[in-house]
Image (cartoon, rainbow, N blue to C red; front, side):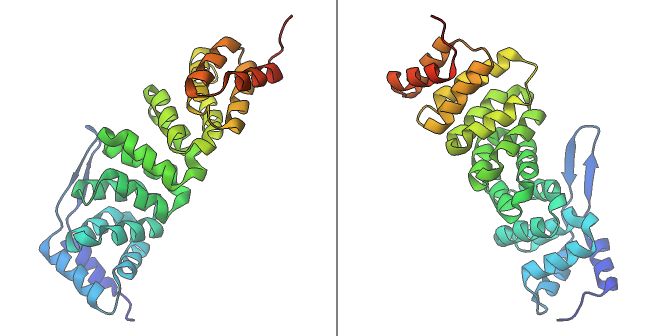
Length: 265
């Protein structure tokens, strides 16, 4: 397999379109790659190389040109968007924000699928990929969050925490969306989010009460929530009403409250 020659890569770079960042307005303008750059890229793929190998070689050599090369690849092989996004993220995960930006600009598929491909390609960057997807496609916010935490449930707490820091006004929305999708890790998600609002007692109480209702069918999570409610001095009647609303038997929530609350005679 012949190596890419630097002169050829330089030609491709010069022939390609550019990605212009309008930082003053927060708008990204992506120019279309030239026909010459697309043809050159196709030639490299066809020259005893797979698409993934071609992307890996280019992005490894020129990581700062990740957006440009992803743009060229998607122009050349739009139907192979899954392989292009996956190979790009696997090669340069630190540029996942730009990769998702380009994929969204080209509208290769729904934003939720784009983030799913990115998360599966590099799970350790799941929270970064999710935040980027929400940034570029805010109208699909909840769908993106659901897809991301479903794809990488072990990172659900970190995904939710990073999103809350980026979108504090959506705290309750992120909490509910996340624990509905992956309730078995709901208590860890809540713990992570409580850390972001520890100075706000009202917000903390709301998060705990909402979580009690959403996780009422999960005994281990519910017990942790009752314990947290007691630690935050939340009225036990509120906890009971929320648990019953979520489907817990009255006798079961009473037993948990008696176990974790110090009842006064």
